[in-house]
Image (cartoon, rainbow, N blue to C red; front, side, top):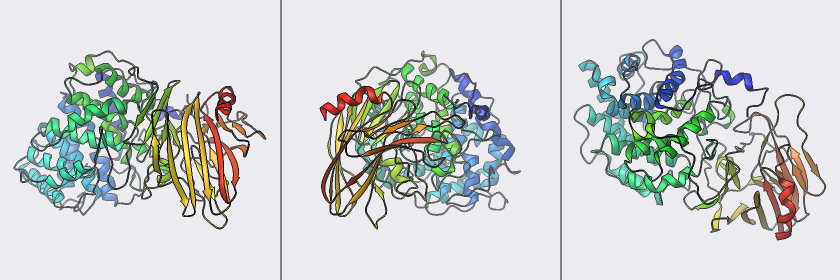
Length: 590
């Protein structure tokens, strides 16, 4: 439910009020999302110039983003039989953007260049919609396009999901003429295969990042190559996708909300792209057609009620509202249009079983599940999905600790990132615990080591400082979860532990939250955190605005404690709702 003070802004969302129940609705939604971009196209159509706001790459690449990212949807719609698409601006832009003599030339392709990312969408469009996108070009334009793409194949790609971009560019070249040598891309294929963890999961490069890129990158790209460029594909993509599909479906709840976890959350409804592409590629899917359809459409309907667009209807950088604070340093104003991958479903024509099926709810599954790939233990209840996380590491990304290393994440309570100038006492710390020693910077969990994991909980060990070891036991219980921490420290520590962030009204009067000397902090919706050992004080903390991914203002129930040198034990019960109802029973068990 949108805060009444924010409700007027929903009207800017191009999806708002749209039915989103059929393929025709999806085509209309695609048109509504892309229409606001027309006002910002350059004269030569090669660039979409939304804002002077910068990213880590140059503005030429940023403006190419705005041109290329809609192609994921448009090319799919063309492949699915749509004939009403106006391809002329895209043909003109492709011609001018690849022409070094034109003022809107996209620029030479460099090593590990953002242009490589966007040219993957161009490569896909050349394969899936060649007749509309490429064939009408002049002979000179065709040569320039292919020359530009060939230059990209000679560049270095980042050793993660980017290696699929090389294969998609190769596919575009093969679709439009003599392609690279047959062995082209073999290095990337081998390197991608080395990132496969088994059981359907991939890690996204070095480290242990296992997030939404598994769905909207690794599986989507592999399946698209298998479907549209089988000569380029040499992988086991469909077999792996069949293993992944029922597991990934658990990241979505009955309201359509996906689990907000990891980086690139500004891509929003791209998180459902996997289910549409999987439906396209598997004639006998492991999930019923109606279930796959329901996941995609419920997610889009949920987004239709969020504040995801600026006043001109252009998708904003942010998640539930315009919030560049939570963005990655590679997010330009055109980046959110990666969300158009959700419209890859349009590659299926109207008579496909996906569109003909009645929309179905999620399958009945056990309430609890363990997923070793991401290090998750999941609980589906009360129309929400909550996960206890073993913790992943992403220090190279902005707010990597908050996006990957909290104890718990939930579809009902998207996480907060921290303000750059946050002090120990002012940090949000939702879903996590921070420690501070005198004279040292405060730290939250990072570099966790999983000791044990089962279907109800897990045990991890982490070291905020070299001389501090913390063992944390996380386990679902009642309507929430229990956290137990053993702190072994060579120095005295202060600790702050937070429950889930809760929306705080953006207008007066504010709902009253409570905390007391017994070690219980409860927010207005009944959720909160309770100390189970009587060792900590409680408070409901109001952090700075615009930290939450979902809503501009939140409050966080917290426990404040002290760990003396030596060994200390702490325990808490955390719930999204009904804290008091369950706390007493849990305390007796602990």
